[in-house]
Amino acid sequence: MNMPTSITISNVTGSSPYDIYLSPVDTSNLYYMTQIESMDLPYTFIVPKLLQDYIEYCLQIEDADGCIITNFFTIT
Image (cartoon, rainbow, N blue to C red; front, side, top):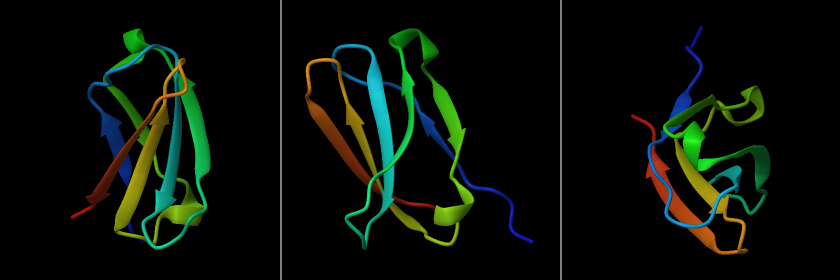
């Protein structure tokens, strides 16, 4: 049995609050995770079971002004 994958967001540039989305890199389906405030950082969350089998992700953060920050990464 694999351990659940967790992702930590250390810092975000922009206007709080932030909506957090996650998707596998090879799909265009974004999954809403949660909304956080600046004071919640660093913020760690567990990748949902639906997405646990992937190793490459797209993390998308939308700030209060509608600006979108995107980060692609690989879990090793």
